[in-house]
Length: 114
Length: 457
Image 1 (cartoon, rainbow over the protein chains, first blue to last red):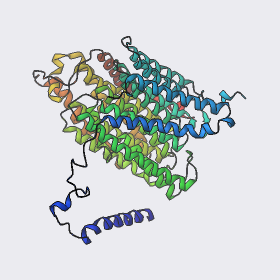
Image 2 (cartoon, helix red, strand yellow):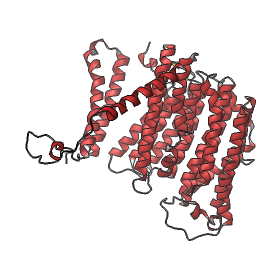
Image 3 (cartoon, rainbow over the protein chains, first blue to last red):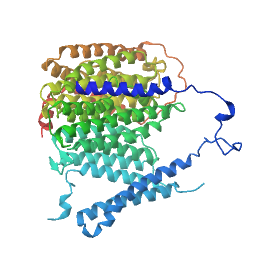
Image 4 (cartoon, chains in turn brown, green):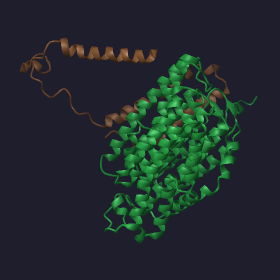
């Protein structure tokens, strides 16, 4: 029962905060030139929000994958002198998997620049 | 002591085999020329050896994350069995093979988990390749991506709810191990986690992703999703119910199951496209499973009591895979194209009719015995009203199952229009292999008694 009350209170607070700006804030006035992006007085050359090339997404995903791999490798590398055999084997298996992934991406041409 | 023996290699044989198969599939994709059918052979070999290794595992706990018991081992057989038709349909592209093996590996990890975190890992590992596989399906342009995006967002929400429930459970019991707990916070945690399991099963009101995903997928993929993933969802639900079998969440399940069955049956009556119709019928069957899970929890959640659910899932694996394999073997996509099919191909029509009768639960098919066992368990637990609801849903489902049979046998045949499903003659074999057990297993009720001894740890 307490959890239900908590959920209702949270919902009420969120709704109130969301509507408060719309209810109590100043009404927007449309004044032509004042709505354009600010570029120290110059006329803007091109729109600020433009389309992004899709291949950047693939590079971003590859970066995230290998960055997480690095995040696991760094603590292990710093402590490698006090690591016994099972831990060494586990980490070697992990590194081998990531190296296999790299080989697969390389072979499939995911690392090419256009 | 030899450090290698400390690794749970003995118990995790199937999982290691699946992982090796996944790497082998990717490695095969790296080479330029593959012999024809190589990937298919690799995946089938991996599934067969996983089944064999699962039979050889020794029950026990290996560290905090892995616990192998009879329930987990027998459910693994369901996963591997349900994946065979999909393996048969693989062509030379290594990506669907790797994704499918990854999904089955996730299900296998779910089966041997002894910890809530491992359950979550298995759940997500199973779902992520499924999103990608759905997005690769054939069909009208954009339909597959739309279905995959809907599935992904809904699945992501379910995963988030699972984590929230896990946090509440940890706050109540200070541990993530799969041991039972009492108290309101633990029950609330289990309820939230159970919502994720219900999502995977396709229970109302979390079923909205299912018809689009099954319709956009290829028939074999829809077969994999409806059999193996449903089994995995049910196993997740059973593991969670074992933690708090007497909670209000467990008490809600029978009613929810009956509601799911009725909604699925009513929605299927109006469908024109066969894959969507089978998707809604899949929702109706999931309703029966949820009812069975609720009845199991009401009777104390003993492992041996899952035998009716196991039998239902095993017979449903044959029925559902057979129905989707028929769609692939005949190339029929809609009810209009099915009219008069019995005149065009009498043998395949008879097989499909047998599968439909099994799905409807007509004696003496396996479907009838499976439904009977589930309803029997529910009645033993005193759940009269949900059983009545599920019985009503079974009656409504006769409307479309018998309607399809009527379309095949008693309607005029139209000129077959060009269909988006390409015909694969090899799948006729799969339809045979599925229709015969589906029709005949109902005559072997003594199998279920043997199952009960097998499922106990």
